[in-house]
Length: 174
Image (cartoon, rainbow, N blue to C red; front, side):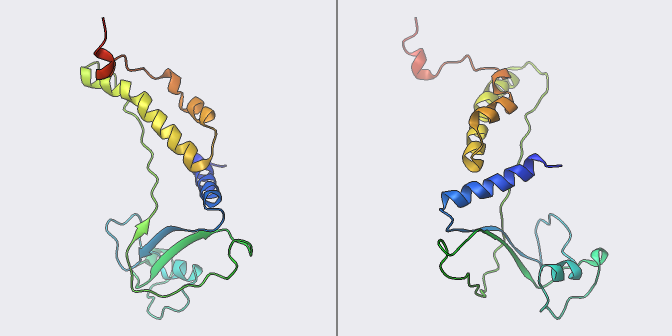
C-alpha cells in the first residue's frame, strides 16, 4: 500500500530533477556513524553497513541487528538520474575530511483542534487558512502536484476566514 510520504518523496525528487534539467546530484543525507546528537535510531549494525557496501572496514565488531554500535564510517546517500546527454562523464567520488552531518527533513504539522473560545484560539483558527494555503503552495511547488487537488484534500474552504481587515484597509472605512 502506498502512503502519502511515498508519493511525496517520489514526486519531490522527480520535480527537482526536472527543475535541474537532469543535471543534478541530490544529497539526501550524510551522516557520521561514529556519533549522533540527537540519534534518530540506533547505529547501523556491521551486517547493515556491509549490505550498504562497507566491505572495507576492518574494525566492525558485532554482527546482527541486535548488536549495533557506533562505527567509524561516514555514510552518504545520493540520488541521481543521468544519461550520456546530461552527464557526459561518469560520476567520480573523492575522499574528503569533511564529516559534517546533513539530512533532508520533512515535518508534518497538525493543527490544534481544541474547542476553546478565547481571543487567542479564535485568532489561531483564522490564521489556519493562510497557513494551509502556504503549505499547499509549497507542496505544489516541490512535487508538481495540482494545487486545486491539494486544496480540496486539505479542505481549505472549510476553514474560517479572518474578518479583520489590514491596517491600510481600515484607513478609509466609513
